[in-house]
Length: 239
Image: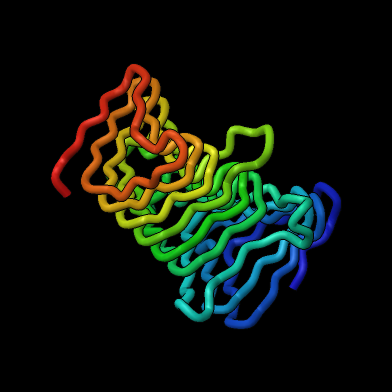
């Protein structure tokens, strides 16, 4: 399967990616999925040319396994794809064993209810970007996942960043080798439990009226891995 066309945008209701399939997006091409969204089976792959993108206005589910992840990656690692954007408008998405790499936005989660488990975001400007979780049905839980090497030279890259998001939980993740590990910004609220924070230039930061509650975490010895705050609240709580 392939999506082609310079600056082209394709709209369709849904896509089912079968195990072992490869869907390729040529440079500057994109697809918007509405309605049923995307269901990606274990071992399916999505390959993107420079600045190509996938926009899901609906449900996004991946059914990866430990031995057969669902892959989202570029044709050429030195030419980043734009990223994957999900807006389910509160409908529940389940993302398991997905791998996002070499994008501007590995996965951009907006106004969605999502369980993101056992996944990775690497070598991106924003590994995981979360925005506009403003209603209880729009909540994101990220568990047992890894954000690493999101440290683009001469760019403030992020392992995980949240903006205007009141319902975010991070539990038992590995957040390592990023420029910023976790940034909670613009009035966001987040709960963090049992995460490993290591080898980031800045570990955890709550900014601009945000509220961060942290349970136990494992902190490395390189970089500014302690939590900082700027007009925000940072509280240690029992996990």
